[in-house]
Image 1: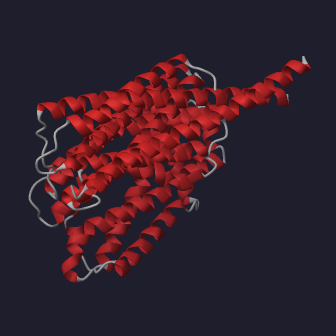
Image 2: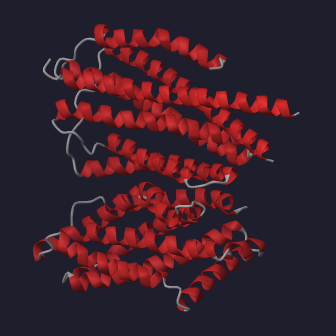
Length: 225
Length: 224
Length: 47
């Protein structure tokens, strides 16, 4: 129980910091909004196209806003050497990792809700909100995958002199299965295409379990000095 | 250059195998009925791909052993094999493209196998970008070992996901596949030759990595 | 036989790629070996 306790303590700490004006969440939301506007210029988003473009646009926004947010939170952690004091506290590397995954997951989910809402408003596509219950499993599993890999890699890149700029180069190729799964399952459900959404959910679940196990084993190697 | 026994043996082995392989590919293997002579790229392409996978597997194993033993020799092995693998993966993509153009009339196709190699290529380019940005020798080894492991376990997932993705959006089907016995034997010999080449390139690069390490150590010694 | 260019191209690229890689590594190896023997001689003089 102590294990879960320290993970939750880290989650609480991150929420507090965010409330006190560490601006990583607001930056994420701002980027999402900006990307939605840019996609509107880049693609023909007329009434008849929105439904087929929705899953692609949304997942690109989720991916890039997510990279920005996760890169920032771990950079802040490294800058203040905050993680050092955590290392000396009874919280082990594993519960530290789980706590960070949870806080990243929370911020990603907030960003996604915000993005979905603004997508519905800006693209006049209320259907996406009414279909949210069906879309939820895919969204959650995909976001969890983002958070699992993103937390690990964002801590890795803080050690490099290029910093968070390096994050997309490591992170994007690895999460390709999640992006494929997220886009495809959402597209299948939104447009009522023939079967296969369940299969994508399964692939994303396998990805999540695999990366949860491996990251848990490896995380202590990237924060030990 | 100083002599190294393993490298010399592998070199002489290649001196025999390489010309023989080329002879088999261009003279002994029959011309494919539909695709014609271009089909001979296949022997090179598949062999290079197998070499790349062998090299990346070696990176994966060396990375695990490094995290366990904390000996920098294993990091040199991991980075040397990753470099060999990256070279081969690059050549796989180029030869794949040169194969796709005459056979399928496109330079690139989103075939699951090609896509897997492309994503792997990105992962290992990232691996070297990351290594370039860290000064501390031990941290560099430790962190890139983590990338070496994470990247490798992604291969089956990527492979499976892209395959499933393609099964929904069929674009091009792979023709042929039925190799006659002579072709099969040539293929096997070609595979063997290129696996020897992989091991040779690996040892060549590994020796360089070791000597670089020694130079760094001596430099530190003379500065003190 | 109208596609022989692709066949020759593929084998040439592979051959050039591997040769260049070997050449670059051999050159580096040689340079480092020379520097190493210089430094070793220097260390011997000092002691």
